[in-house]
Figure 1 (cartoon, rainbow, N blue to C red):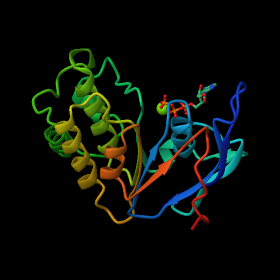
Figure 2 (figure 1 turned 90 degrees about the vertical axis):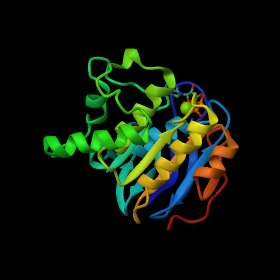
Figure 3 (figure 1 turned 120 degrees about the vertical axis):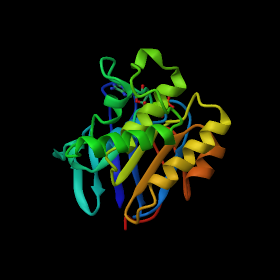
Figure 4 (figure 1 turned 180 degrees about the horizontal axis):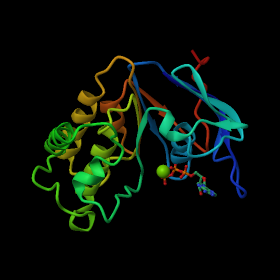
Length: 220
Ligand SMILES: Nc1ncnc2c1ncn2[C@@H]1O[C@H](COP(=O)(O)OP(=O)(O)OP(=O)(O)O)[C@@H](O)[C@H]1O
Ligand SMILES: [Mg+2]
């Protein structure tokens, strides 16, 4: 379960980037956030991931207080996988090494099996030894997705992860995300500009506008 209550973030200039937002994502469900450029979607994801500290409000992850204005649980302790809007792959690591970056404690054989499985899912079999500079934009995005999925995080926060993919590939990647998330406790928060994509990927679509999301009822 992920829940945010009255979540607010203010940067030195301008109005609140995220303005008293409350909603929850019950265990096993998915929510998409749609909204115009600059309305606060990425900032909200970064708050939930623990990459920004809120000025007001709280973030709960699996019932535990993960952020409030006085304290932020570090991102790596939240069991959350994230795909950033601009996928920053490590340029000096191969595709395979990038995918395994956040995976710890796997034996060599298991790690190879996991990368093989992920490369197949993202339709990049045979490209494990390439470097990011040798990939197209859409291929880099898929590697970033595989990197987020590799440690099998409980929750996923995806910030326009499939931009620049053609439609067919986009729908296939959505089913990869769906199949990887078929665990009871998993939550998905998916940011996109594409209303059709939002409908396909999620059980509930929230509209964000100028840092606000219309009231979603009490935090459960
Ligand atoms: N580090 C920062 N410092 C100052 N202002 C920021 C910072 N990060 C974001 N902002 C501002 O906060 C607002 C929300 O930005 P955010 O990136 O969350 O929007 P977004 O909805 O993700 O937009 P897009 O769809 O273009 O990605 C914008 O006005 C942006 O300029
Ligand atoms: Mg954004």
